[in-house]
Amino acid sequence: MTNNNIPLTQSDPKKANRFWRWIPVLLLSLMLLVSAWAVLFKGLTGEFVWYGLQIIGPLIGLIFLIVTLIKIIRHRKGTPRQWIALAVSVLAILPIVNLFTPVRYPYFLSLSKPAATVRLPADAPLQVIWGGDKLKNNNHVFSPDQRWAYDFLVEPYFSGSTNLNDYGCYGVPVVAPIDGMVTFAHDNEPDEIPGVISNNVTNPKGNYVVIKMESDTYLVIAHLQPGSVAVQTGDAVTEGQVIGACGNSGNTSEPHIHIHHQRIDPEVWGVGYGEGLPLYFRDHDGPPMPEGGYEIIGNRAVPLGPVVTHLLTK
Image 1 (cartoon, rainbow, N blue to C red):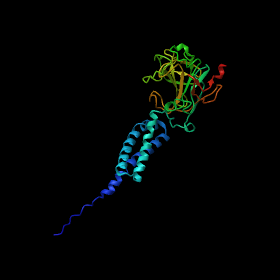
Image 2: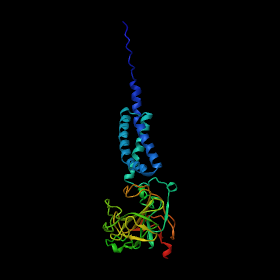
Image 3: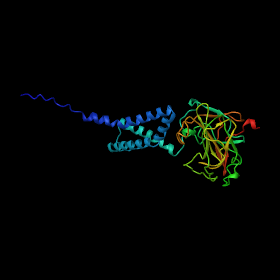
Image 4: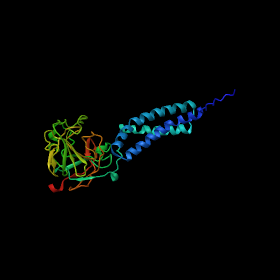
């Protein structure tokens, strides 16, 4: 009697092995493509990927790098596939640099809309210490929500004093830069001791006011003096209306006025998220987007940015 059993097809172990050898390259390449896509399309997806890329990507890349190096050393030579895997692994590790050296978040000025053009947040002459599109001028550019934020000082500043009243900005009235609605107002955070970086990660904005504009985007004005916030959540504000006074609350080293523009309500997502948007100033004696920065001369920090003043107060 004949055997009618159909013989099983035997898989080729060499082919299967070759397939699995390409998995590291394919996974890392996919990770890089997804990251590039998310950043290009901006929004919260891009921001989550940006942060994840700095931790998960380097971890995966490091594992594949070690495995690939061991294989190359063991065989005393590398195949083209292994050299490709090595190169892709190094690319995956590179984003970890962002954890130690600030890198400008990849929102591009010409592509980020809508921009807002408002008046300055105070009538006093304001020294621009941080502002603009570049890292050398603006220490906020690495944070997605504060991509085009500004910090303003009032003379005297940089004294190193622990007395708040030794700083010109302390107590300066802060005004609404544009008509809008207050979506959140927070008060009663204490002032920090000036002259040192407070590193207040619990309430980094300190006392602050959020204004929603006609564009359905938000202005955040932070580090106000405790007890000075003059508006409440739900209030309508008009341009030039006093909303508080400059203080030293939150994550700060001395009294200053912080302002930035973002797409997403900052009360929905915390600091570090929110898609920062361009912010320009009108009705003053400087450029629409004044740049900041400073240099050390001797033992002194010297601001590089201009002093800008609201024109209608001259």
